[in-house]
Image: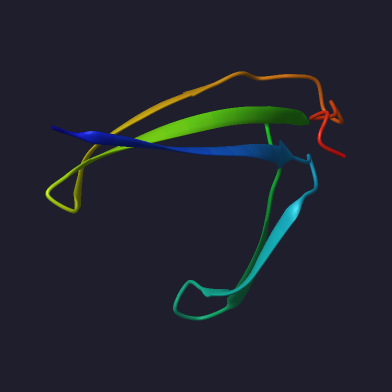
Length: 75
């Protein structure tokens, strides 16, 4: 029989601009800015790892997008 092991976390996405440097086009060094196009949000999620014979054989996951800064209640 398979065993389900849950893992809960909260992902916090900030709209901070990420800079990537050190890239090259073969001649010049490049720097790129990559915005977080989806905006700020929090996403609590849970994963269920199904384990059979000591090995993960399936993963089920679900999450919910909430406003940025939403508290978890565990603070």
